Length: 455
Image (cartoon, rainbow, N blue to C red):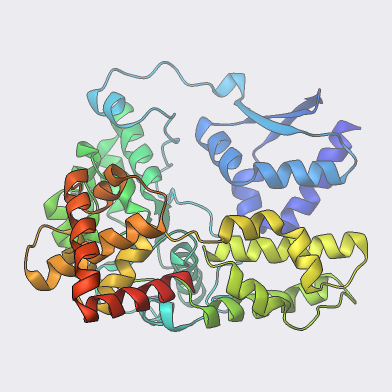
């Protein structure tokens, strides 16, 4: 009976995650049994087990539960026959990773991460905050000679960096199936490098990563502070640029703002096109919701949506796109289960926890971006060491707003302003408090910035 449940769940997983993901990650799993609400699986390697646990565990649990099985959680272990021998003693391995690194790639295999079939250019909603990033990604996806190398995309969580990365890879595969496109996270790059060191296959690693036509690395900030991985990344980067191969990188902040990243790597990353994905505005959030609703109308036949609901969600949920989409998914599922029309009252009841969490959640990073935009200065200068009055005053205003509008302590705010001491933040706050009463322009600026941040 348990095996039948897993068989049914596998069929549904194939539809949900797509054939490529299914073949790469789900098919290699062996169902080991279900006891006391725990579904156990065996994976051929730690890498596959860890990846599935991080990316597909919730879906597996949901699909098993949908067959009638009582599942509270899922666990993954490496099959006994495939468990690795104790690792070799290597300084780089001990220093740079605590998790079990991934398996070495077979010769000619591109050891990349799976692509999400939902993340295409067609499903990406374009608005003012992301139009430049979208246009640059489109240009890279056209293939041909590298227009700007690298393309560096950065921004906060849920703003579309990974979506654009996947969209580029999908488009390149579609246009040129023979092209060797490698997409992976910086964490995976490090695991592959550590495994190569461990297995004394570093030359194979170098040849493999230098043989690609397009290298795409997500969340590059992960390698900051990891010296030997940075060294190898630097040489891989240079080798590909010298061969005129395209590189696309993403991170949660600009190259110059990534602490513990080597200066030579920062310099290299800044040589191409660096594009910031700004926090979403109301119009973009509404557009995302409208697109999502179209797909839900087909899934939930006959479900009615009252006027004003989408506008309400776009106005109230401003944190990031993932939270916004998750709220809409929950709303449709709840309304379907209780058989009611989706009204404003229903939305407020169903999403009470999300709405509370979204109220007044201004971040220090958002304040810094808004202040830098308002005064037309670079974000890196606002956070950096420059003491020019045209930069120092906006910096103090940003410090003041961070103290007023967030729950962060002075030391925490100081860390987000380039590692400044809390006494520096205190001085900046007091200075602005003095200026509010004597400088009419600063008082007006603060009032405007508050409105923008609290909108």
